[in-house]
Length: 198
Image 1 (cartoon, rainbow, N blue to C red):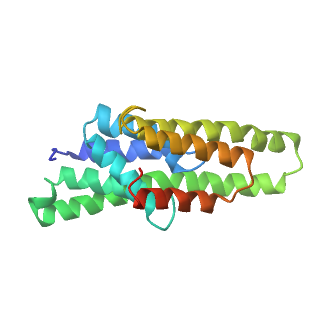
Image 2 (cartoon, one colour):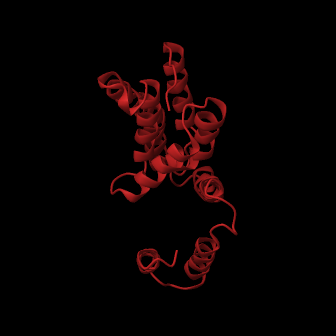
């Protein structure tokens, strides 16, 4: 995929990630639906498969959860540079995409988190601080569910991958109703995938 990018487009990418950074309650992954709408639906800078592949690869790799932002920036920059076959210009453009996306997503939220954490720690006994912490839990859960929904919907309906949906439902019930460690469930899912059941 090849797209043409101007300085205004790079600035738009930066400002979008700057604004999403302040909405990333529960981590950058919670803003994935908004990123999908902007990068795939509105701007057409990424394909749906590039978007979902970036998230899947980053989640499978060891390291921080925010790696998918770097991959999204890489893919946007690579597309802006003419695609993978366009030579060194495409590679430099991809690196610029990584830098812009990471600066945009990290700087505002890191600054705000540092200031708020210091203030919250100094005032941890205030009723408002305790209420804020308790009230954020359902918001984070809802944002994570919406991210999961976007990723699942791009892979087809429940009947296309009914085994995956069944495994997801069974895993959710086991996590909710038992004290079975999550790593055992991840291992069971990996084994089922390796054996070809999924």
